[in-house]
Length: 436
Image (tube, rainbow, N blue to C red; front, side, top):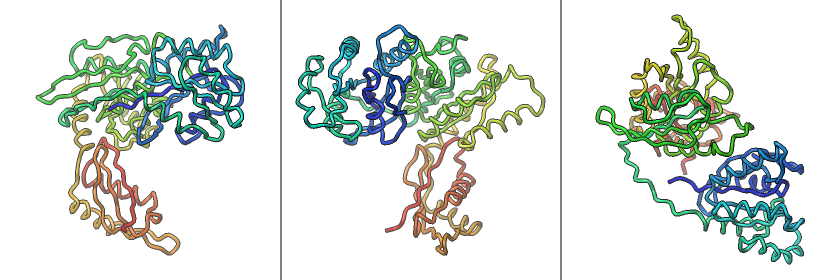
């Protein structure tokens, strides 16, 4: 079941980023008292009344022909298009301005639910002015203060009322769902076609041709799969044409629905910083990951080329040390046969369960090989462990004091679990808990 999406829009300098940071619980957006500081859409996740949703902070909408203003307006329009509910924020100290009325006309055209938030209403005496904002035509205005966090509960109560009813997907555990993510033009659509064996997806050399996620069901050797192609992720800070309606958020939605994520790299152009950031989305989501080095046919090779490239990948993606690396060419289909077995293996490991008695045998052996450390004269004691979840495999280790479980020893246990049970392609999580 996908999360609803909320976009915060309004003219510059009305406090959108301050509210965004309060809702997500951390300072992600840059907050500065200068119009236009937030120039791009910023995404995160928030929660209210046990309802999780994605939230977008946008650059302020300003009317004008200057390139920066046009770009900021386009970014806001894309965020509006992606959202289920819009928080329209205005500055309560200024009152409803001509610019606010211009923004309101844009929002009326969207046909999306709009909740009007009047920010900077710190002074209770200002609340008497709240009724003038009914003239904007969005119903009850909600007075709030981003600086002091006032009124946000009432605002969010109203926002989640407008979330669309979501049907829970009828997910068949026997069907492996995998998505392809990566920056534009690394050959994701060509790889989809190579996997499917037919021209089911349009392929083009123009970066950003795939503008939305595309689900394709197929059967291979009697097993069912769903492949999810996504728009290429571009570096934040670039401005995209409004007609493209491209979004990192769409790729994040695809990751949410996947069991396995293929991080596609371009062998010809090598690894860049953006590749690492893209891969980080899949890792943080706890998905099984396979690193796919595409366009391997374009690289001049000798007997050491693959090993050298693999070393570069391992060095650049140290947080994905569990992910297998597959070298192939989607165009020539060379080595394409090596990919599907890795997808199946990663999916199986992602859903793997370990019997408690066998897990604790590994714990005992691990303690014999590497006894637990002492910190400030106190020794860590591991009592027992159990697996509490899958996708990804998650373990709880019961100890005398969780504070004594150093990161390095937790890493040692993770390596021991991998040696004993495989887990190639999937992250695993280990939590230390004190036995009550």
